[in-house]
Amino acid sequence: MSVLPAYALDAYRTSLETRILRTGQENGRPYAVLDDTLFYPEGGGQPADRGFLGEVAVLDVQRREGQIRHYLAQPVEPGPTPLRLDWGRRFDHMQQHTGQHLLTALADARFGWPTTAFHLGESRCDVELAVPSLSAAELEALEEAIAAEIRAAHPIQARHVDAEAYAALPVRSRGLPEGHEGPIRLVEIQGLDLNTCGGTHLRSTAELEVVKLLGTEPLRGGTRLFFVAGRRARARMEAHERRNATLRTRLGAPDEELVPVLEVRLEQLRQAERQTRALEEALAQAYAQAWAAHPDPVQDHHLPDRSAAFLGVVARAFVPLAPQKRLFLTGGDPLAFLVATGPDSGVDLPNLGSAVAQLLEGKGGGKAPIYQGKAASLARREEAARAVRA
Image (cartoon, rainbow, N blue to C red; front, top):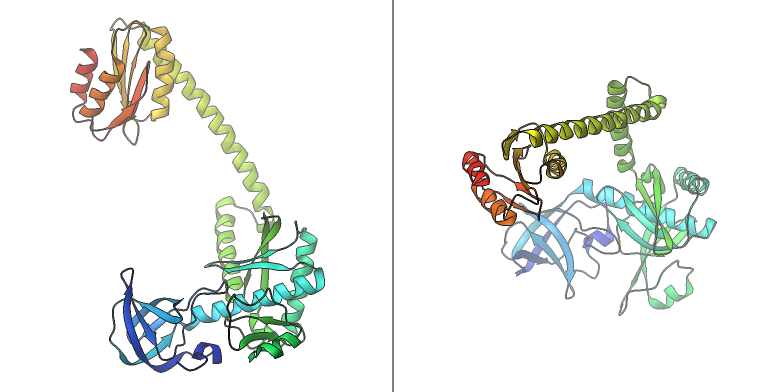
């Protein structure tokens, strides 16, 4: 490999002819080391690139023992090979990473909020800012400042300098990696920021298109700020519009009334749930009273439309009303069973419950007065009922 890999020399390059120098396996994953590479290895908060080595998919790229290892879908042999970059993924990462540089530079220089960490996620990105909290007005001011610099179309360039030149430049940096040797890579947003970074970036802030701040959460005494840039922001807007279109149809309301209408519907649902619970409680009490009054000392019933929780409510009401009786219930979806015995029934409930569970191919547990669990089959339910009666 040359002093600098192809991805560091030209982030816009999408194909390359190179050679496979070495191959190997790491924890069962085949990998290849190349003479030169288009693929950015994970680092600095930016995920690794994807693409193809010949016709073999590149699944991950990592730095290991001074090498750049390309982890592959299948083993390959040393020799010449073409590389093809997943350009959509690369350009997305360039937009997100450049967006972070611009956001970080403005947050620090204009608002006094230094960045302490950066993470480029699959669907959104975040930075950690050394500020306890951010108000809605502060977020709006930051977003407007970012938008203005996107419109200004500042050129962005990467270059390498030696340690002496680096020390003389006004570089915004949290320091070089421990043990770093050789040239130092700087990324400059002309007129705004000069920063150490090894990642891939755009040629102009105009290519960012847009940076949208999504919200914040407290973290480690600071604030985590979520954002998306470029195509991600447009895709997010498209998803919101599709979702709103569905909500408009379902709720029969325009966008500005969706939340109030939904709140009314949710309150109606909560009221209906409260009424349902009250009715179920009343029904459970009615079952318990009727079965407790029945002369048969063993009550055996299947309630196919009732949940395991409902069976428990019935049993807890039944036992005080019938201290000498036994209750065997099944029902629910998924299948559930319950055995309840009064304190004067003289039954070894753990053993009886375990026998019933075995007959129903299920599992359960509990202590007096209720043993309950899940059943896999009711094919031997009659045998289980006889066991309760025995």
